[in-house]
Image (cartoon, rainbow, N blue to C red; front, side):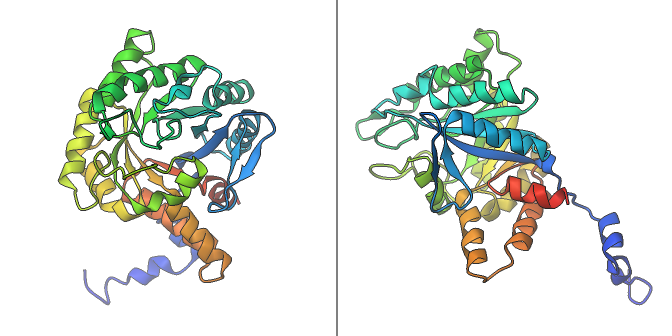
Length: 324
């Protein structure tokens, strides 16, 4: 193709032409809205580092879910903040815990909505790590037993999908096993398969009250320079029964999303994480960027990279724009 026979600008001349020929189309159906659920009733604690988001008691989280569903957002993912934390995260198994209550409230009010639950102990342990601590480190296999029971508790409460984010080896197989053993073979697993040890999680850790009390999570979350390892992690999760695999964070790892989609052809989700959200919000508030345009450009980039589902704190704002 050579100029002047081929003039690419011809097809960019008007907005309608650009829309007709768009290779990537973003819709509210692409989004999953994260919600932070806290114990109690009538509780709404704004999260300073995440403008527009708050810790919500179960009934208020259900109201947000209803509003999101009306905008065309098909799913939410729930993170719990319990009343009590201990060394082993025992509140994660409470059948009347904040996540379990929120599942029931949401399904009562909008049964068609897909309710997904985060399966991880970091919000429930007093030390903030994602598993059981033995000899100063997270014990992988001891943690699997608690994750199995946590996932089963969420499914018994009525969730539609579980999403383990702990990055323990073998957790997908362990959860798949316990769900199948208890008659829940129809419940899908969306695994945080390539979850990197990222600096972009700071605002989330404030929101979920899950900052590690010592050390870091580099011994179980992925090392940022690695891509081949991500493929191995994803393939392992698929072999163990994951139905959807996730890359987290999204923006700094668009290459990982694309590689997984191209090489494995498996459903891929991507988490547009709290740090990515808060940077755009902060720059927008200072007038350094056009917040709405940057938000939409970022979300399109994640879908263009190959993500079929996007977990994003921008879900409601973006859906309103897309709905006109």
